[in-house]
Image (cartoon, rainbow, N blue to C red; front, side, top):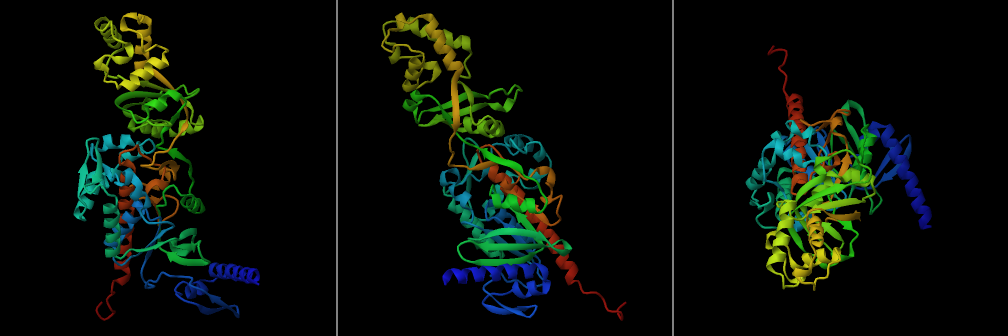
Length: 497
C-alpha cells in the first residue's frame, strides 16, 4: 500500500515538473505556494505540497547564490548592500561557512599579509597566477579584506609568516560576523537544500530547481541572476556544464607526502625550520622552478608535511596526479651551508672530539636534533658507538651528501586537515575577471574555488574567495540597482510635455 502511494506521488511530481516547464502560467501559480493547495492544468486537478518556501514581491529582481561558503556569502552581502531592492537567496546543502569553521586548525586563516604588492601576491597561485595579474586584486585585495572585517567588528592579527587570523583565534568570529551582516542586509539563506538544475528561459533569466534530499521537496524559482560559488562540489560543475561551460578536471591540491621509510617513524613530530626540497617526477624532463621550494618541514607518522611540502603539492598537483602521486623528494637540510663547508665542519668535529662516540655529538653549525643525527647514522649504516677517531672520511662524505641531498621515495598523498583545496574547475578564459560574469551566459557569475584557481597554503585561497565574491556581488548589485531605477522611473505625462 505504502509503495503504491509513493509511486503515485512520484508520477504526479513528474507531471507537475513537466507542466511547470511547459506552462509559464502554471509556473506562476506554483512558485508562490507556501502550503498545500489544489491546482488545475488541462482540466486535471493536482495537490502541490510546499513547492516554495521563498517569497518575494513579483517586481523584485532575484539573485540565487549556489553555495553558502566564503565566496557565496561575501557576494550575497555585497550585492544586497548595493541593491536593497534585490532579493538574494543563498542555497547551501550543508552548514553555511563550514570550510571557514575548520580552516587554520579552527582559527580561520582569513588572508595573507606578507605582501600587498599584487605582482608578488599572485605568485602564490599555481593555477591563476598569470590571469590574476590584471585588476582582480586591485578591486578587492588582502588589505581591503582586512579592513572589511575590522569595520564589521572583527579584530585581526598578522603572524610572523604572514598568515592573518582573528585575534580571538576562533573561526566563529568570522562566521558570526558574516552571518550577522547577511541577516542585517536581508540576505535569505536556505540550508539542507541543493540546486539540482538551472535552465535558461526568456529575457536572460534562469529557471532554478531546488531540492531537499531528506524529504520529498521540490522548489522552482525564476532568477534574474545566478552566482555559482559551490567550491569543489560536483553539483556546481554539473550546473556550469548545463549552462554551456567546460570544466578543467578537478584534482587534489595542498596535501602531505607519504614516504616509504620506516626509520622516519622515530622522527615523528620533528620540525626543520628551513629546508630546500626538490620534487622529481618520473619521466618529467622540463624544468619547473616551482617544484623546488624553501621553508619549514615537519615529519609525521606517515611521511612529510609542513609549508615546504604543501607548496610543492600545490605547484605539482597536476603532475603528481599524472604520476599517481609517486616520485622522489630531494631534501637539503642545511640549505645555507655549502657542501664543502659541511664536509669541513664534520672533519673539524672529528679532530676535536676523537674520544667521543659519534652518536653523542655532532657539529652545532647544522642545528640538528639528536634523533635526526641518529637517523642519518642508521641510514648510512654507521655504528653510533664508534668513536669519532675511528670514523673514516668517506663515511663523513656520505653524511655530508645525505645532509645536502637526502632522497625520499614519495609513495602517495596524505591529508592536510587545515585546508582542503582542489585544482581545476571553470577555466578563467570563460569568465570576465573584472565582473566575474560568464562570457558564455549573460547574468551568470562565478566566484571562489569553483574556478580553476587555487593558491598555496597561508590564506591565499580564502583571498580568492573574498575577492571573487566581492567583484561578483558588486557587479550584480550595480546591475540590479540600475534596472530598478529604470523600471521605477516616472515618465512625464503628455500635458507636461
